[in-house]
Length: 401
Image (cartoon, rainbow, N blue to C red; front, side, top):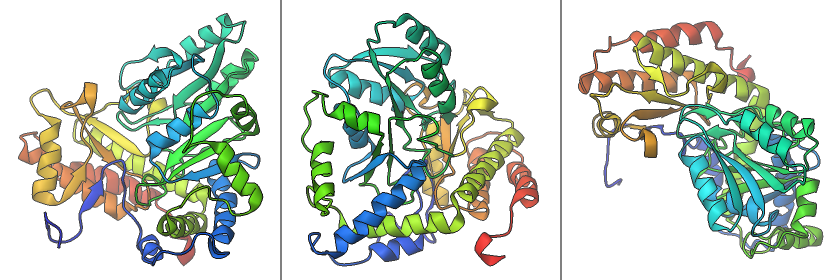
């Protein structure tokens, strides 16, 4: 029995880890296997091919690493860069800040471009830095696609256009931890050199699997990169790929079967339908926030995220109390505000294997919590706004038509 038991199901609406669908749980409920037997390499081969589809790449090489998104960051950086290399990276929230901290601790020379939390990356500054860098000292541009702390999504196509406009050869490294499999991601079209995600976000798996995809240009860069690496070294993976055994060390068998089931669910729904579903859930959440008379942390519509909404509370309310009350009274898990926005925002995650009625349950819970903490919300206002939108925009379930 759970130590902190609550009746019914926990309503998990943090922006990761997310709900795990029952078919994935069943797929992982199995004994260990010998990963050197023919079965695991055969499954791994199909997984690597199918993983390329979620990145929308035909030329990229994926690496499935037993790690978290933080480890995937390190894999992307250490395989492509050398100590002292100059990078450009953007602070727009807690997770972009942490990636910059990692770059600095790994010994890279980071040009930090700061924006207010709630704004997207300042791409005008990127353009000016690239224009000035005629000697091509900038070796990589590192950007978080979707900043989970503030609910901000960056325009990756615009980043690629700026790089191309200045014919700059810098590598384009992207954290897609809370975007890939939820927001449209086009690795080949946008010229992304390394993209990465984590299993616990829109893939709807347990934490523990970092997935990195490297372009041919990134693979070439890895041959001369001098950053120290062992566990994350792509060279070891590529050696075992060529042998047809795929694994330089023991993988998580259960997570591999879970990944197989998770990909099958995504492909059955259809990736474009998955993106449309996340867009609906994001829009419905924002309409509810507006109906409550509260503000979105994200300052412009062009940056709105369809995977997480950070809701700004009035100064007399501590947003951490909203999160505490949700868990203690309603068995509802919401995201805390982090760092600069701690106490000022709470976050509603709406990503992964999630549907409209689940979201409406969350929004109803938030309304009761707001009432509990003294905010003058009209009960039913946000739910009604979300319902009206969803009732007019939710299609029939594809497999049931």
